[in-house]
Image 1 (cartoon, one colour):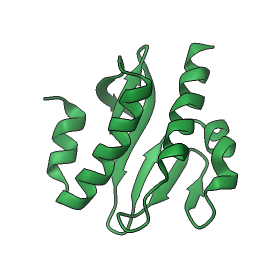
Image 2 (cartoon, one colour):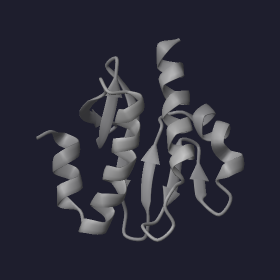
Image 3 (tube, helix red, strand yellow):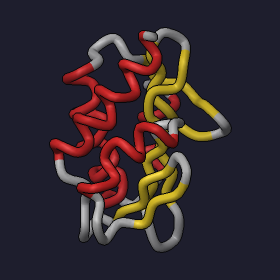
Image 4 (tube, helix red, strand yellow):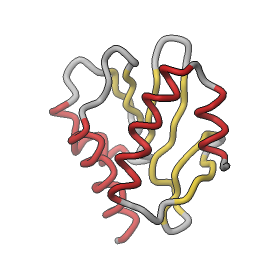
Length: 114
């Protein structure tokens, strides 16, 4: 078990499952990503750098690609979602599309590889 597993298990089942889906998609693209923390949140790390962070709030879930450029790269496909500089907010009832998650992970991985 790792930090991300522990965090997901601490959440209500629906929120944990929503995050687990995102993690599974990310690990398909970056199978060597590791569990850890970044900026105080549960995160997947790639080459010792934060790849994707996870945080649950009272009214929404958030993923953090740790990059405003990554959020901007998928912004046009996130109509109806709340966005900020490096954050994408969603809910269990309105999840992120798999292709958007995949593109977020690929864009962030490419940034780290540079």
